[in-house]
Image (tube, rainbow, N blue to C red; front, top):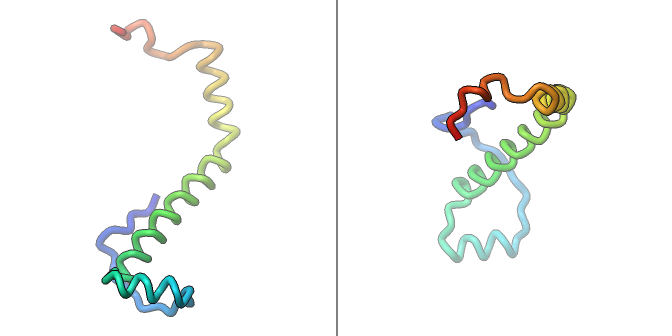
Length: 79
């Protein structure tokens, strides 16, 4: 997953719901910071969603192997 912290900012244009924008401004919200944080969270969510879909076959194969053979170091577990 690419890291997004400490990346330079870039100007962009957004079209937002005017009533929501007015309410956010009246609350003193930092729009850039809020949108940046929410967008980063959504990008991360979609990244992992895609990663899980792309790797579903390998995950299923690993889980089947563990179900059949058990954990490789299970004999060393103390719990």
